[in-house]
Image 1 (tube, rainbow, N blue to C red):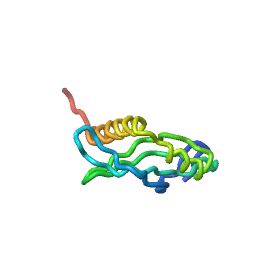
Image 2 (image 1 turned 45 degrees about the horizontal axis):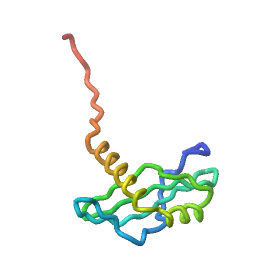
Image 3 (image 1 turned 135 degrees about the horizontal axis):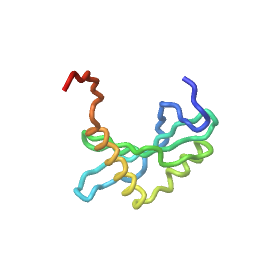
Image 4 (image 1 turned 180 degrees about the vertical axis):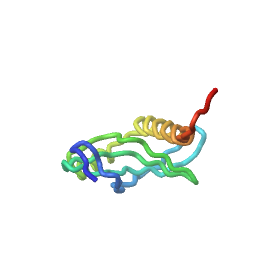
Length: 111
């Protein structure tokens, strides 16, 4: 499959697990990881993965970095306020996937 210079491949690599757990206001705990995806032009896309008990939430792309090392550096600087926003984005994306209607093809006859 061909990709343009801005399109990441579909394989995401675990870059790092963050040192601290993420806690929701409801008290749920999530392990937080940053995943990366090298593009054909050598730059890296990054996203955030939250893994809880029986629940996985992932953001869309959160950053673009010039190298894997730069993505790792970005990940080490993530602050709690950023993770709050990322968790909200991941939750919204997860809900959208669960509620997206299935494509149905139907032929309509005379009404």
